[in-house]
Length: 359
Ligand code: PLP
Image (cartoon, rainbow, N blue to C red):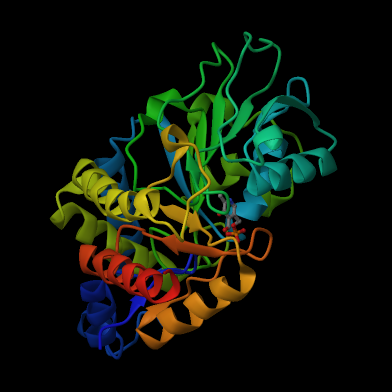
């Protein structure tokens, strides 16, 4: 029986990539050393990190005036690093309150003594819609923070809010490389790797170079300018995670790039949403225009039935469908590496479960 991993992260990796890692693990490029053992100062690793950066630049069409930085610390560290590096003029940012991760970003920014204005909130709809701007953004804000995909609530921005000359800083953790965006529309993008890019332990920062270098006396490990100057090797980078991410980037190129991925993701998500929308038992609470192609929460409305569904699904090889502890129910994450066959298997099991539990 095939198994399909619907986890929100760490999440499914492309099978050919996992197989390549397995094959190469004992001796990387005939060096006699595993990738886990090679020095980050070696030529072998230079090639790995340079290729990863170039492949990412090619896939996202990252302009030359943007720096690509490889950090550790997850998306969460960037909640701190972004205000420390970018909110230097006024220590004042705007934020769109689209759910849990946006509110975590607000909390951490406040800890850096940055004033955070909530410009719009989806709280009133229980985050089943997306907050949108209704008035022009104060031009003295240092930036506006946006979560492009809300992993827990299952909402996603496909159109960006207009913020005038105020840079947009995007937490793209859960739809990085799964949805196409124009990098030039952002001052900065960051994403933890463990959903669409590779193993946990690596975080990508893409930042416009005129926005960095203005902060004084930052802790070195949070300093974008320092990481840019040192090519992300101020200290030991996560060598294995960068290597694995590099393989995923090559896999993405072989799949036809991000436009092809986005189209496939829309088709996969539509299979599931179409089923849920006609179901008598299951439903997705999100307003259709705001729905994510990456994370699809759904419920029966009866926690005991939800638990029975999750247990049955697990027995059928459909893994990690339990919803986030904050919202309960179920959640299917359909990242790039989830094959269409996985979504079809999920829809078939949903239909079978519904037939068995409705009269
Ligand atoms: N932002 C979003 C949108 C996320 O989904 C997550 C984790 O799921 C985070 C930030 C936090 O990421 P990390 O665990 O890498 O710090």
